[in-house]
Image (cartoon, rainbow, N blue to C red; front, top):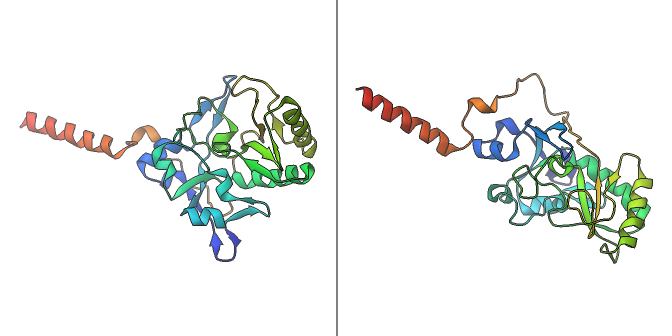
Length: 231
């Protein structure tokens, strides 16, 4: 999938990743939202090979891939390293943010931890569209820092007017339900199957395989101990 001169994004089926990455990304696992509704996590991801590639790849004219993978130490260590992985639906989010940017008439800046957050991220306490790559926390629009009720409510209205597909958090102080220092926009639990993918393959059952390499070593060690005892 091309995204500019010399740049492309590789599409990955997360079931093809190593055990540790699968355990962190949890492809196709069901998770509960704050209302106890179940949602299936994404299976298909873009592979971002380097920091330079993340900066070079544009999803839309005004949004680069790097803006959606900015995280701090609350993200799992392995997922801070390149290659990085982000759900394919992030392209849909970038498209809607372009509409929001045009309606706001100013640049839109995504906060650290405000784009994609994996299921292993310490802020991922329940199913959030951030885990699908379809939510953004915006801390600044143009020169306006979003820390006041008036500013957040103003741009919430702009976002909602831009598209009925966009949902926002109202102003308030309850983490995960309201926002008092950013504008939260999301598209819900959207998953994308890229055209490069063939879906004729069955999912690999996670419970049948070790999630970390050390678990496989432990299994071998236990088998070795049992065999020695029998002999």
